[in-house]
Image (cartoon, rainbow, N blue to C red; front, side, top):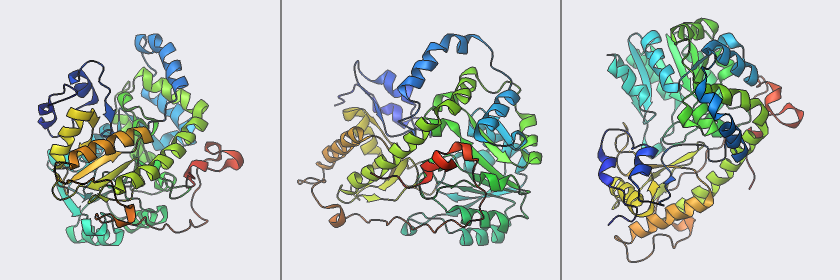
Length: 424
């Protein structure tokens, strides 16, 4: 059956997706794996940057890194942040763990579906997790006013919101997130997880990081691994006022960051233009991929501001069977969402990739669809396709009084150019 030689039983073990390394080790010789599962930036680092990392690999692996405080200070300098407002860790999940241990005392509210560690981590330590279900009929869009009412009714002491949300890709305008933080200023903590926000082009300045650090109970999480396409390094950081960030930083090990992370932090400043270009290319690919997926008859494609799409499969399709079929016959890894709270196996999350990879994905889906239909699943006009379509939300103009990012992060004239809608 399998053209790739991959035993798909490996995909059914555990609650998380099989790792890329598990899949590639199981593949036959010469099989190329295309990853639509792990939400990674495909355009960054550039080949030249990888060449530089390769040249320095011996010293990177041979010698100890600087301590975490030194690396964090350098990151803050590069990003134009005050070092006392930053805590850097071995991935954003390490920060979620410490936030749970140190700052979540009783209960936490979280919309679902979302990133699983926000529900799993507090439950593992016996906290009450108040789950606010997002509705498919609303396109899984989060209504912040309704969420605040839910938090008040449940008397939750901590509130979390992921912006951009994973897996649906919904984006909340910055002004609305600021209002949300201010409406809950009496809570123990308000967390805004911005792990995917760099991929959004809805606003020029989408992050509330500068706003969180001047508030008494707000935390913003960032994931450098996702943004920079370097999941294997495991590095992320949080922004908060010095009291909160200092409390987390004191609990982190002195050498919790590796030498490869340190090297990349020092490279960021030299490659800002390449990073901004990678975001522009990804925005272009997101539009193109969305159009291609919408041509599959019976599939619902939800609008996204992330580097992924949430899709609902046609009724007769099985997400588990499709996932197994694609990896076994086409060497394509996908994320079936049946194990996500608030989702079923009819949903898949598909990472944005270049056009050639999308063609391969669509070909595999068309081939899978032939077992259900005699005619092609890819022969109709997108606007006439049977699946329900969600319109892209319209984002209001930014008010003039929002705190800008440091000017050196942008292009000509000090503007943060990657935040404009990409053309093409």
